[in-house]
Image (cartoon, rainbow, N blue to C red; front, side, top):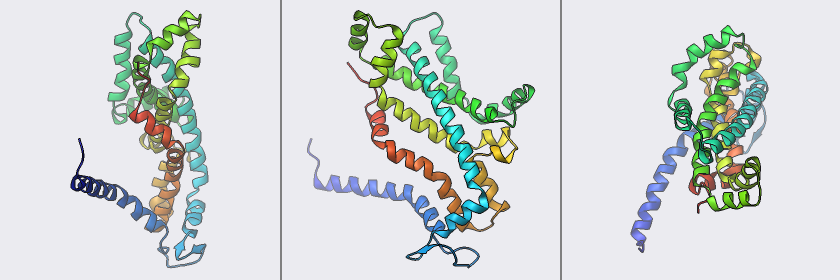
Length: 274
């Protein structure tokens, strides 16, 4: 069916309107971060009227180096552990048949349906009973559990729709179950795995409630939590707060730009189909 020029123009106008609606808050924060300091002091690095010194000042005052390092450790640990466990569990639920698999899979789905707000308080008391509160593990373990729940659902869908011909051919050639998973299916699942990596990293990086409840030590604060304490505690102006927000959001944006091709392929194409 051929699309007329009028329909094409209307589509572009609608897409442009939605893009403007989505990007306007981001551009507003970025413009504020590059604007004149709230104090009126125009010192610092300035290029073509853009006050780049705001980022250096926010970085120093807000101690974002410590917070970003903690967020990076938490995010990388959560992503690595979650991806490995999700691939294994997704393969088990998607390609194997064992007693109780359906019931156990629905238990995994509870991790997706249950919001953090509903479990964070009892989880805090459970972790405090075993002495894990105010530690690195108190931040990462709940997020690993949440990410594995989603990752199992995501990878199960991929493995269930993967080519049975390849699996059967590998079995005929004498490949073991482990070899079929890591040498046959996982290389083909790269778009799906990369999509999961980006989503889990983004969710972990932006997580606010769990670090807020589980830790009180300043050295264990993540970047979003540090940004919340930065407002009011270190600055009452919006310029430095906007600069801090840009600093905190930059790693996620960089990761997405670096992996966007695989991310889009995983979202649109998903699994290899017969």
